[in-house]
Image (cartoon, rainbow, N blue to C red; front, side):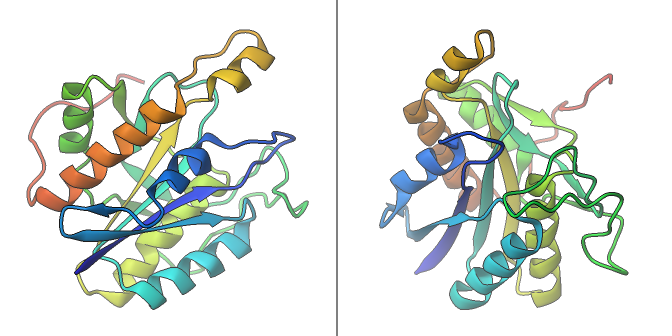
Length: 215
């Protein structure tokens, strides 16, 4: 049986909830097609997130790794195209660390592209009525760190697993507290992740449709 590793991130920056984990934890013990989903929470901490992620990948040897994180201010599920080899933190992580212009992997590639079919995933989510988009940047905080780390580890292992990252909007209760921010219900996020996982597992070649941005 195939294994899918699905990860969310703990709350950070004073929040008491993180939509990525609230959605991801719904997949514990779930099967999708012929794949068993392993749902885990990663710390919002640079080095520790890599250590935890690498341990999970080495233990489970997943066919697909899909990491999920919060991107407050976005209105859609954002499937990330690329992760860059830099930590440049505007705020501190949950252990108080705030790296500036620090490589994630010394001597590693400048960037990795997602190896999941990002355009097919976005189109499938849209077809299911879930707002989704391709994003050209995963930022330079812990989410980008996690995406780069997972793709770096999969490249090192070289057994053909796919990897990618999806950012979520705030949950409605977070948006309400902030006053004026886009949001998405946790059930909609989870539904989008289900569609994304199924599409990633079933799609060998990505769609050749536009997913670019002007800026």
